[in-house]
Length: 401
Image (cartoon, rainbow, N blue to C red; front, side, top):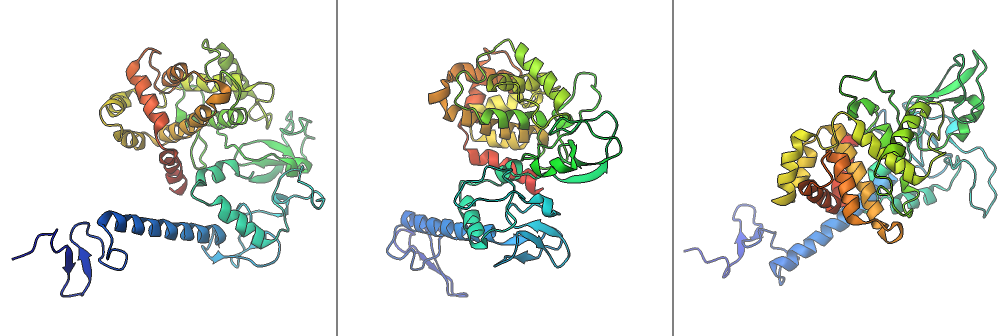
């Protein structure tokens, strides 16, 4: 007769001779002998986390060729890496298909912080580079941040068109001369301005002709991953630099200023690399809200409202499922926006955000419901409380796809 699990909790396989705990189904080994099931599970979890950290550290140091998938590191030499397949890559930021214009050409002063173009250095101690990569690849680092914030400009030469100006220095092109055009943000600049282009490149897709009922979120998304509207990328980066400003998102409920800034942004996107330089963070925050109000479908489409309402009140864990089930441009935009709004609330002691008003404004923007809709505000509160790793995973899945 088989003994109860509490009496004899070890199962021994006669074929493979391995032993397992009948209570927790973990291997019966030195990690479990003399330990309760909970203690053994905790110990194994710590060991797994340590192995994951070691694996991430190795991935941070190892580079992979984007063309032939050859894995490599370097001990010496410059940071422009040429693979045996002739593909080039920056050893620091891992940008693909680069030339020497990718690197800083300004003279460096020893023991003095860099104040130049902040491009990658051509010569740098590889040990220092790898140590920095391991530090920034820790559990708090996120792939989407590296992709969005460090995206390099991928330019090609072309002949200058008539009646166009440099997006950086604003001086007119000489007709027929050679200029650089970025494949990502679509800006055109003088050849001599190339090394002064500010990072990151914000992918731009010229919106098509306005359709009946307005343009969709996907109509503003370029084909670079993660797919996000250029308006959202521009506005979020601008406001993130000024999170301490009091009254963000709540100081101009009329929305008139935001509509005006949005119009200027559409007009200046290809003419200037800093189209929002004449505005403050309040105006840019209102511009973002105006964009979310004007697209054809809200970030959370009306057909998904019932699912979000049910998840927000009955089973909050189902919110993650609702997010994943959204169309790709919508779920990417939602994830990127709520990561930003979590940072805004994280600075509430300085920007003096009033939570109730802030939640109502966000609910109106992402769901396009009346400000007094309690079900929507409950959903937004739940979305603001979701761990940021959930949103980061949404963006990183799109990057890897």
